[in-house]
Image (tube, rainbow, N blue to C red; front, side, top):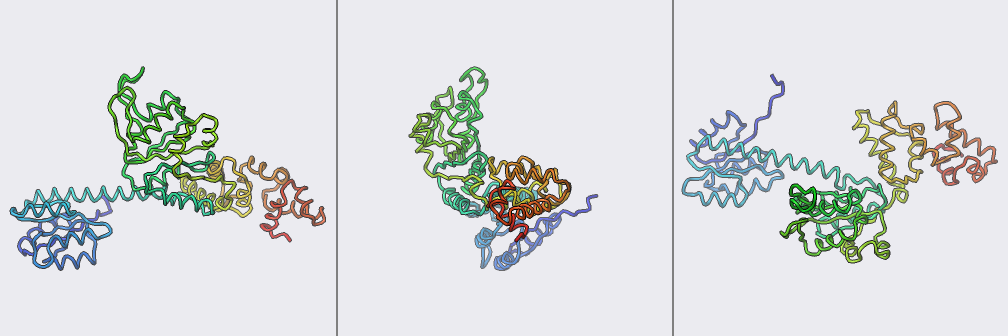
Length: 455
């Protein structure tokens, strides 16, 4: 026996006919938690104070009628399905109620089997709607603005641009180095756009020319050798949604011509087909190449470039926004600890300082992989300098890194502090000479003096 009792669905039943109300209540209470209202005004007051899974109401009642109750349900944050009772002679009125938002209607005298079927459908529709809402919320959290970590001026500008451009139909060109999160920005634009279609991504650099055209536009059976069945292209799949073309600078000139035509006419044909298909897909593209220079070099069509470059979003590399490194590290610490079933992880000031000083040639992708490795390999709950991959430590500060690795002991931060103090003493307090002796920059030395509170 399941120890957890399943919650009964809650129903509000409004009917001014006492006999009908009591008979319906007796039947419904076998399965549902039913609240009764003897007229429309009582029902309105109950709706003000409570939430219900289903509302059942007669259309014709003195005072507040079924239409008033329907209007009230539709004003709620999570509107419950509203089922209307009507006499045979008032079916047109019930149909009008459905046009205004009622879920369905049942004629009087009520057939209990029919009523049960309608209620089950209403509860199922409510469940699906709630699941869709929760799924969209999770997608918003992951791919919407909540998924974009960063508060630097450069990222605030990016986020503001995303908010402005998302509701429009304009094409968007996202430029940035590899690993800066261009696809995440594209997904955020889609999530905030309100479009009902899918987000469909095509990584253009991964497909050869003969497959890319088929992937974008689809093909008919027999269009070419090996085309045994009709294939639906990405433009069709993304109808009323967003088509994201990553690495747009890699597509060959022959495909650029056809892509330009789709953007201008909003129509295309499958390979080997004569039927013209329309598309309302919104196109977002991304590249880590300089398209303007490619236009000058003759490797990218100028007319296509201007058609894509309606709204441009420039994603700065991570090294140009160091203020975002610490929040990103913290974000991925929490994420990977949860992913790997580890307790909440912390990071020492010294380790965080080292990570924020690193140039991150691979941008966010490199940082993400680094944090995942540190979380997986860390034996405790605290990330220290010794958990930072050796290649990063050596690239960051070769002088200190090599000395620390050979100095013995496990307290690397304490060793580093001692090395800095010794270098300062040997240099007579001259910071430039101390930094040179340690093999680090003067700026890094200043930062470490602050971290270790060295006067």
